[in-house]
Image (cartoon, rainbow, N blue to C red):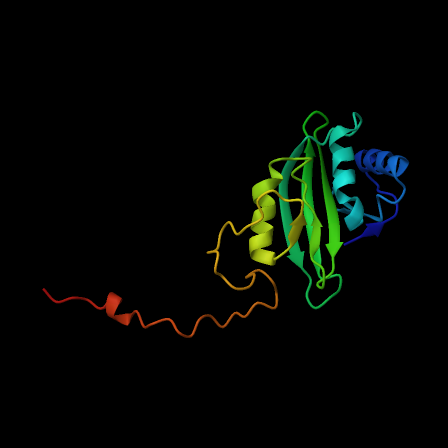
Length: 176
């Protein structure tokens, strides 16, 4: 992955310039890879930066298409939250990335900016254990409520359950 201070893409330059003009601390890093732009944002500025991306008339990122997480265990910061944005009027894409430590995996919810972030954030919470501050309904969405742990974390045990009864009798052919 190539890390650059100034992006080679004209579209990325516009986004980075607008965000830096708005708040110089909003962009800590710009990553350009395979014609995709990722802007790394400090955790405390994520919601404000996302709102700026949506509301700025020059940017118009009016669609959140995905929110996903990467576990970099044992590296710190351990988690990377990635938000994939699309500007339909400008036919442009952008990724906002926030790095989170393993000791405090929490970030502000983006539901106030994009209400569709609700289920995306619930999925990340369920599978990675990332907490979203200000989320209106943060509970499991895929796994049962009594499930212990978060199965997409790299340190989640993969041995499986040892107390599952044998199901061999279910697959024997019955004789007529």
